Image (cartoon, rainbow, N blue to C red; front, side, top):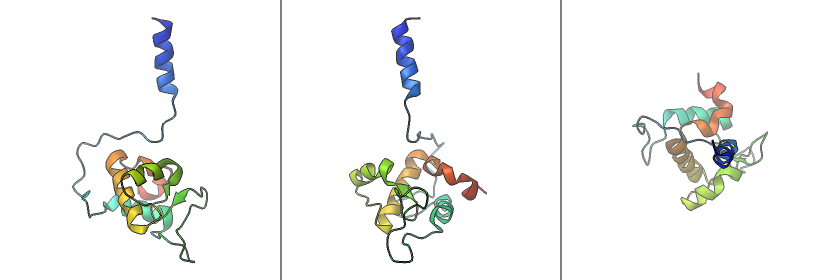
Length: 121
C-alpha cells in the first residue's frame, strides 16, 4: 500500500468531530416546524429542568460549561455560528427551541449524549 494513501486515511480518521450525523430511518413524524419531539422535552428537563432563564431572569448557562445556553443547553462554541446562519438566536427562548429541533433533525440525540443517562430512561 502506498504510504501517502495510508497517511491520508490515518489523518481522516484522527480528525476530531463535533457530532456525527445519525442516519435515522426517516424523520420522526413528531419533528415538524412547530412541534417539539417528546425526547427533546425530556432532554430539556435533564439539561436545565426545562428552564430557559435563571432566577434573575438571565439566560441560563451551564454549571459545568458556561458556553451551554438556555433550555436545551446548546453549546455556543459549537453551534452558535450554524444557528445564526439558520436565523436562530440560541439566547432567545424560541431560537433555542428552534435550534434544538434543527440539531435533532440533523444529528438525532448525539448533541446531548452527556446527559443520556438522565433522559434515556
